[in-house]
Image (cartoon, one colour):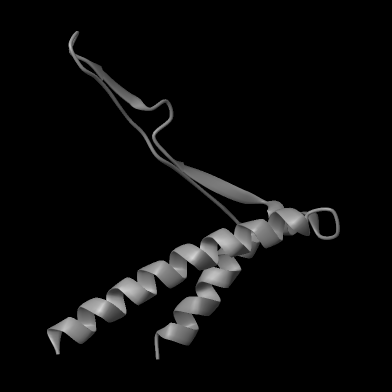
Length: 83
């Protein structure tokens, strides 16, 4: 039972990630026809975190950009997979 729940979590995570990517691409492609679909927001570390230890230099950063089309597709996937 626990294994099935864990695999369902991974399927949901991958589906949401793929939905965000595909939705963002669709929003960018259709931005000439419907400019509202390309409107979005960005969350992340800007500028990236940088740690210099003279021997090793580490840089950590991430940025998530999601437009309206991506958000709509993610919401549809949540509704479909939530059952």
